[in-house]
Image (tube, rainbow, N blue to C red; front, side, top):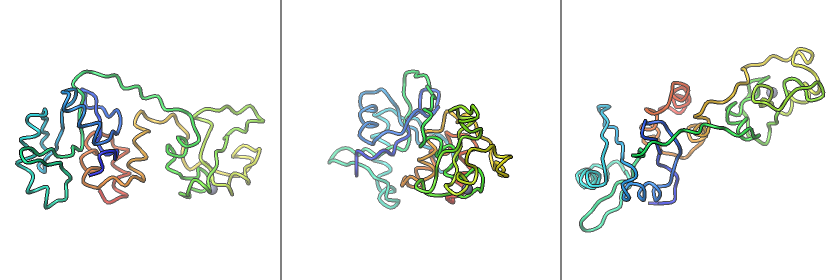
Length: 214
Ligand SMILES: [Zn+2]
């Protein structure tokens, strides 16, 4: 088990996703009783367990986990399954502020050119000002979009209308869940884990997962 691997969804006490943390960090929060484990069973029921109950549950599930390749730590007396999701016991506010960066714009737009709709590697993408800078266009979420290099050069210092280009989607302020999007889009996170995480995210994420067959 790679304990530094970020694969545990951290939720606040109201079940709102805060972050993705490593197995090590999650274990530390659980053992210090700062967090509890959330396990969603096959029938959709939620189990919420503190460390004592989790160790008991883990040892009961051990044989099943062997078959499904679910990672766990085991000593002679105890078993600790790697959690999929944990929730903090104390309330913590969701900050939800997404920084306006090139990468975050790509993520918001799912690496898709706003003009031709092609999904491309970041090497073939650039950021376009819908209203060009030279015309007073601002650096805002609403004015910055992902564009492929080809469309960007066609657009140049023109407005989309002047360049005869249509916007395939609207540039908006990203949702508070934006930071999680990359985990759903490209991550090497196991399907089994994503299936559990899905329950804590709104509809827009369900569509992303559908593309991955989840
Ligand atoms: Zn394009």
